[in-house]
Length: 117
Image (cartoon, rainbow, N blue to C red; front, side, top):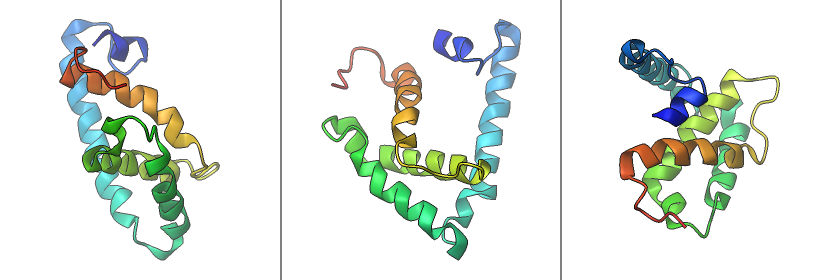
């Protein structure tokens, strides 16, 4: 939880954390509906194709990143980011920028005792 506060994802005020987290989750699911569902549109095919090339390259020696569910999460995150940031779009390597954030958040759910490396 501390890492989310440091990143500015959650407020320092403990009373507002749960409502902020709920709002951000709703926002993300709205982005999925608004943006991700357009991934098959013709004008997004180049973006979608490049993301699919890069996802298997994301930490290929770490089994966690080769799991289908994790790759689906990365696909959604990267596609939504690219569509919401058309000035840069998707460029090779953005998947590597997402990785540390993903690890920080996933550790809260799977525990620090699991060795990802």
